[in-house]
Length: 93
Image 1 (cartoon, rainbow, N blue to C red):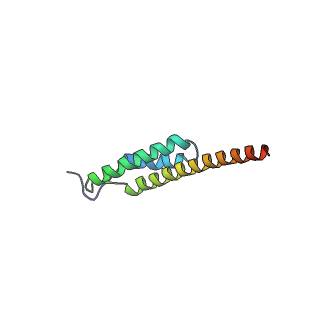
Image 2: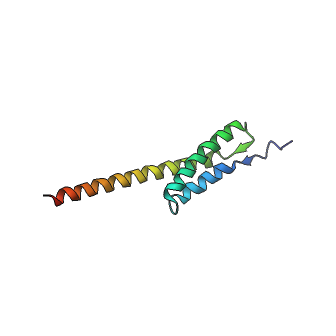
Image 3: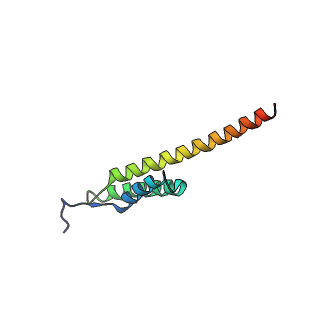
């Protein structure tokens, strides 16, 4: 019988946080996607474990980093499109 005072940290929660951090430095798109997917799965597993697992904060941090990375990427792409459009408009004058 496992000791109720000793809870295991969910592995996917750790993976989510690690890839969330890596997505800002090394793996922008893949890291964000892995962080988001693993974060959602980890939070569901932690809820289903009925207190045997912990790491919800780690999974949440990975989710936040992953979603912020995606939002930043979309913003950068939109700014590039807008910038190229402005350059084209100014060049045609």
